[in-house]
Image (cartoon, rainbow, N blue to C red; front, top):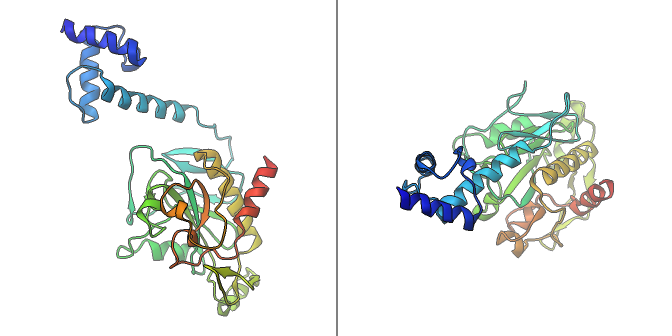
Length: 296
């Protein structure tokens, strides 16, 4: 036992930890028991020696706890989004979380995460659905095996379907899924659906004309409402603040190698991931990001 105590004293000095990190008062038998308990809990060899592997796990746990405790406090009445179970503020009045009245939450089609994941991208999609509830129903079908973190409805309401720490299956790329959060912006896309929007009180959607994607011209299609773009900007700002994703976007209207390799850090459209997708053609992410920067 004395050899182990001596080892831990030397380890603490070289690696920079203290017995108090484990709830012990000194280098003694109590500390050895607490180290072994920590090691068993995290699937490590329970030898009571706080070596480099145990130290890395212990340090990561402490950093995660400090981040959680130091998260921005939500003021009464302020809306928020969820990351690892913690609420982060958003400057938008219409936000519905999974546990809120009218909230929706995925029960399949995603990878649940318990450890904090490294999120470096935000992916914008359009849903080719009439509203956010229809989008959720489509994605949440068991055989669909798809999911998304957020959806923006026709009136600008932001729904969160999944905690940002979980891996949603939305980008068609395992690499991008692991490193991203995503949003589906409600838009049925085809102009033939204009009558539905007018009949249901949303008004006529603007049309996008002259857009290109992957270097090819597109036929006219329905654009997002302005309130949806403003909601998207608010969501992008909140995600940037919560996850520290840089306010950058790739150049061009096609696939980015930096994105597909997982090296890019910033805000992207789905068409930046694969040539099989055209969303969100016509959406000027660079303009939205500039507005966010100018308002900071």
